[in-house]
Amino acid sequence: MIAHEARLTNAYLRTPRAAAVAGIAFSVLLFAVFWLMRLSVPADPHEPGAWLKEDMTYVALAMNLVPFAGVAFLWFVGVLRDRLGEREDQFFATVFLGSGFLLLAMLFAAAAVVGAITIAFRAAPETLVNSATFHFGRALAYAMINIYLVKTAAVFMITTSTIAIYTRLTRRWLAIGGYGIAIVLLFGSSYVGWSLLVFPFWVLLVSVSILWDDRGVLPSSSIGVSA
Image (cartoon, rainbow, N blue to C red; front, side):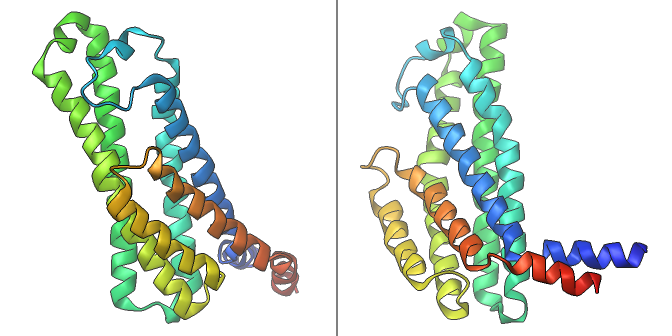
């Protein structure tokens, strides 16, 4: 009975539907995080910190959503690698996995910096805002998100698109579109506001495409296993 349940669970986890659901969850959560932060925190890194004196409910909610988005992204990457199986090329797999880990590390680090700023402000409001520590932390979070995370996301998209073209992981037009969006992120992110939002939007499109192409696979797989 236990062995039968294990086989059923493995069959379910290996379906592309798991990757699609995880990708959609990541996209929605990351959209929510960026939207909530933009509502509360000015885009200008030189802003003197007046936003800290406002209601911090949105910022706290965004910080609490980041770990869930990270777990969903890890699930998305893991199931995609499992779907590739023996077709996975070692070079592209290394860049694919490494860029994904770097992306999450910078997202978590930036969230930790913002969270630390808000906690320190509650302890010593006037001291923090007028200190070099606040401006350093604010600039650090801005650089990690708007420069390094964006570039790493572009690398992830290029690698994923290359893998998708050679293995038919997603629709060809979607993979080619990933190249174009990645180029925009690499060279135009400093000039286009909200440019980082195209990354979760692209993950959303990939996830919906996988879910659409693989509709109906789960029931047949489950029937085969249970038989």
